Length: 316
Image (tube, rainbow, N blue to C red; front, top):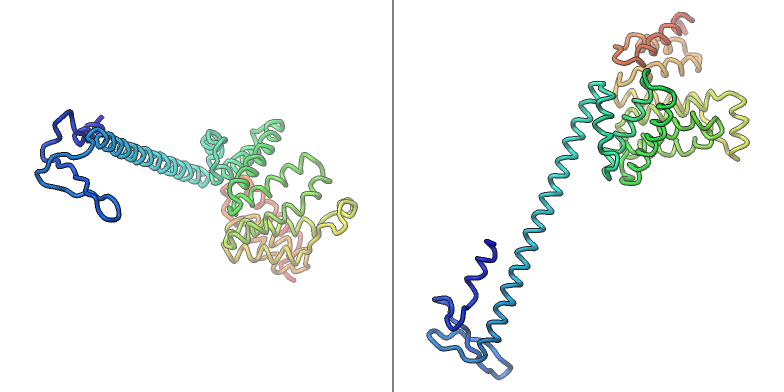
């Protein structure tokens, strides 16, 4: 209404124009028609046509003002939505760092229909973490594992440039393989490797992605003979790797972020054991054993490292 009131004062009413408003006079020139303002002159021409033209101009102005208002409203709404996503991401990251697995899942599951890749890969991670809790039943665990893969896949579809989406998609594919058998797990090996490598390419400073690529190499380096046989059936060139390749990734992860993960320390020790270097194996296993235990996994790694250390002397 305020906008309409501002416009209405520009419109002439009946025989009287707005005080001080002088109408233009049409003047014919050699190349057509022009308008010229004449102070104090009377209207010459068709007043009704002019009034219709003025009304049309006013309505055009009204339409433009309305467009501006709607555009401004859309921008404000979009900005508020971005701020809301950022707020949720901050809450999610705080809960993750605090180890509040179930609270994190309850926060993020509200956004399972989101189109935001950052929310979706975090939801995939949270679903997987809940699946691994000791209080989660086997039936619930399976459901959560498949849901995690669904969320990770959607995150990747929304943003293929997200290193975290590639990383968690690969992790979730590997988890699903536990339910689909060794044949499916080996068949997915190249897909898993491809996404870990892409994650590293997109973010060379993410120690976790580098570590997981090392795990992939270590897994295929120690693959049992019967699994190798299945791999030879499935692939003309089955996936394979060496302990040296695995070691390179574990070392690189440690260089990027020293002591970031107890399992990386443990696998450095175990890989050196495989390579018959007991001195360096003992060095890394001792670091794994002394790593502060923040999670149940850390405690399990401490116990495994301690057990391995009792099995040999520290000499090479």
